[in-house]
Length: 103
Image (cartoon, rainbow, N blue to C red; front, side, top):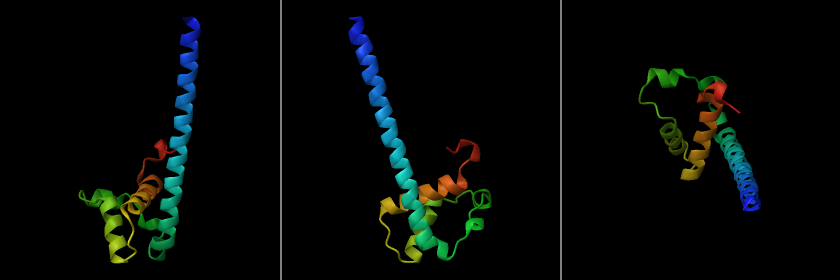
């Protein structure tokens, strides 16, 4: 019985670590895709100083995902929802998240 509990514990830890590694790789891939799309399209008009907290504090209705979607339509890039989400994720993590919470 003790052997089964140890085996179950080892398998549980192993499965959790594999799932965590896979999740971290997905986050990194998402960040890289968002960064690539942003640099390909958005960098034509926006530099780093464009993205500041003043947008969030000045306008309580500012929605970063909505702005990403709006500007993709304005410049007619025809991004899919997943691409908009990736760019939104890149912007949120790079410019709008709390620096103490970054990896």
